[in-house]
Length: 159
Image 1 (cartoon, rainbow, N blue to C red):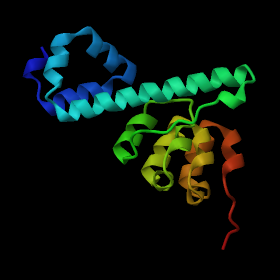
Image 2 (image 1 turned 90 degrees about the vertical axis):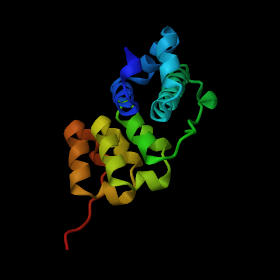
Image 3 (image 1 turned 180 degrees about the horizontal axis):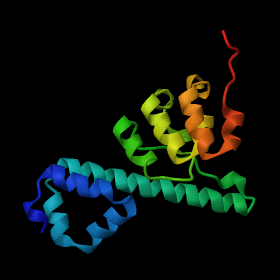
């Protein structure tokens, strides 16, 4: 089935899936695994999926530690990838998480990254660069999702 697909088609299929599903498919099917070993774009998606799983596991572990009032054991997520493409991948998949908190300052200053982040979880506005906390469009996206995030917006006096 997968042997007739080109790299771009495989990449499109794998981008559509969630990270955990990608990894399950690879563990389940050796024939798929053989085909994609030679596809650099799909290998990149697989690496992103592994990083996505690591991120989600870290977040779940930290939530469990907080519930048990064991805050000294909370882990800081340090991503293995700092490129924009990875963060678009991650932010479009992790809902209900302040993933932007772990991005570099450069990425927190990127309009596309911040827009995706607040669309998927309004509280990411807290971690956006200051310029976006007063950006009407970005703040509006976040507030439409959750009005409580207005506390993170900056109010500038009109000129």
